[in-house]
Amino acid sequence: MIQFFKSNIEPNKKLRSIEILILVLLCIGSIVSICIGFSSVHSDVGDIQYQRSINMVRDEEEEDYDSDSTICDVIYRDGDKKLVVSYTYEEYEKLNKNTIVAYEYKTTKGTPLYFHHKDVTHKEAQYTYQQVMAEELMPVFNLGTSTFILALSLAIMMLFSKQFTTYEKSWFMIIMVLATIFSVLFPEEGANGVNGIVIMLLYLLDTFLNILCELLISKQSRYNFLVSVLVEIVEIITCIVLMYRFATMTVTLFFWLPIDIISYINWTKHKDEEESELTKVRKLKGYQEVLVIVGIVVWTIVVGYFISGLDIATDFYNNKTLETAIIYIDACASAVGIANGLFIFFRLREQWLAWYICAFLEAVINIISGQYVLLILKIGYFTNTTYGYIKWSKYIKEHQEKEKISIF
Image 1 (tube, rainbow, N blue to C red):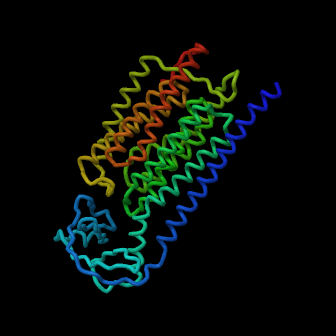
Image 2: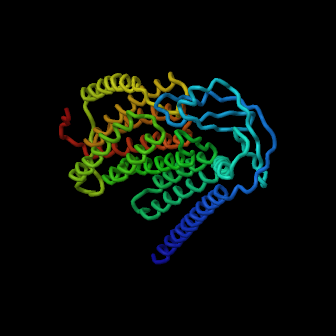
Image 3: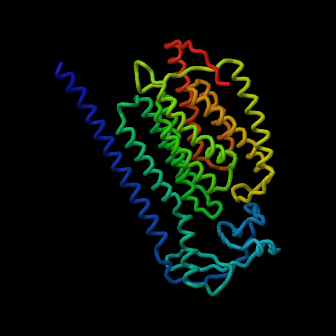
């Protein structure tokens, strides 16, 4: 018998040693990547030498500015060569040419820099050099931030290993590894004057917090609401940074944050008698489902129409029709999200069906917007939603809850 326990403990010790080693390597990799990136970006540009002048063509597809815009960045290209010129809106309106003469300079390290005038000052050269290096080293920065989030994910799974099954830990880590890979393969471009590295960090945080929250919901744990508060904060910041999805931002601010706090209190009052870590869950009746569907349709039409009529400046989309379509999809997603929030508050199994719809609508928005790293989050949603639906259904069947549901 003693020998059996010894043989059981040894593999666990080996596994924990491997996990610690991986955690240390991830932390080192993150620190090294970020340090390399920062040192390269903030290194001195040194002397620059004039090379030649080039005619570049204006890339108007990436422009969508109006009178509310303070700075209008206009991009000029010649093959893989790129020049960004910042104008005030008044200057931007007066632009009547689609070409510009760009002046090419080279640093002592051979890095080409492009300007719209000669006699470049050291300060201008340093700024342009930093922008060019930040763009070139974006995969390095993304690797640093993603490995940090991955290390944080592993640390949580190790710290609370007894609370999660092998499947749950494997699912969580697989999603985060995929998010890491996608963040390096598909770096985000800057938007609204915010560097793509910052945007990618927000996406990775959103993915990490959301799947952790989803996992805790599937486990019927009331602690999911504490994580959910952090989710809402990150999503609000993302909407502000990208100047988009205002229906979702409004719902997050005035609905999700309050409902998370109230739901935590409600779930705490309905603990399972046998397992205090679990919360009692149940399901809806047919007529209640119909009322919810009607409410979602009405919300989508009203909110979508209202927001599409607002004149909001953003350079995240370059097509008005596309932007309007996103607004209506976002309105529908926010409506389903509200229904989902109520389902979760009342501990109803139908919240998993709402998650399916939300995940699909969010995936459509992500594809249209080119937010490929967030598609990993949607894969996590679809897989965990199936897992959660099965677990909750099994719980409801086993406990045969008899209480009548009346939430309207």
